[in-house]
Image 1 (tube, rainbow, N blue to C red):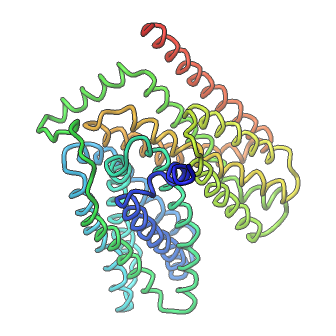
Image 2 (cartoon, rainbow, N blue to C red; image 1 turned 90 degrees about the horizontal axis):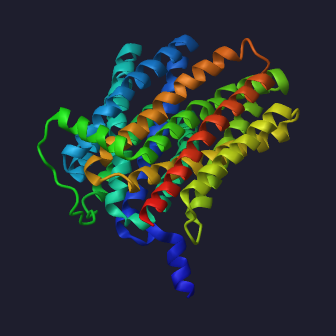
Length: 413
């Protein structure tokens, strides 16, 4: 009985395929966060300009988002394990070239923007592919836990990577950060040699035209309204819920009248909450209904926002930050699994591209809008507006899903 309970809790971690994958996945993301932190420091140290940092962030990330859409079609057309191996091999080169250039004391902002864009482009193609590949190495019954474990590893890497980068920058030549990032792709690349995807009779790599693929995908959406509602909930949550992070500096300066130290603590609070949220999903002995987690995520996020609306002390804001971070990893892994479980394997790559676009594209748009409105509206009114719009719209779509299920049960009866 005890052994069964442990196996139920660990779920995907009992499979060697997933053990190898998640270890390599964690190492590669730690290296990526190391490089991101190092590049921000390097550019500011060389140029002494926050404007250049803005150019760098925009030019290396936003254009690459459009490649995420292409990734879905490529993922569904090629053998996924081999495709991932090719991307990981190519990912070795941009950070290696950066390290070599710095070794010879050469720094040019536009050259580094170009190399960082290449890395970001590969990452944009890689992101949906990794999501789908997880569904090929663990049974469907463990998919939700596997994706929550992936979210956990991502957020741990997000905390650990900058810490390691800071230590290396202070104590060693900065080029080590770039070479370490290049090497960080090797564990997953090597692990893929030993990972054997589960047999899937459903997925056949057929040569069909792009127009036929798009038509097939659109027909699938038309016939599966529940999927469409979930994607709309995802986009709305990403647009509003994740955008509140950009307002943290404003709260620290205008409300708390504090410094960057408290900003760092609040940012860490979001990360700690995200880790706790991912663990709460992973450690469940029995898988609860997915809609329960979506409703819980909205409730926790709402409580976090209420802390920022009415709170006046650092501790209240820290609690709000933790609740908001917790809601993120109670939402995104669940939506990811929700979509993958209900999408045929032949078009799962395109579905994950849509998931990634909604995740990567809606966030900067929402942050831009909130950043603009924050200059004209009292923050209490702005947060109340965000809370009302998000809950109203997503409650409407959740109601549509419940009605759709009731109707489906009635038809079956």
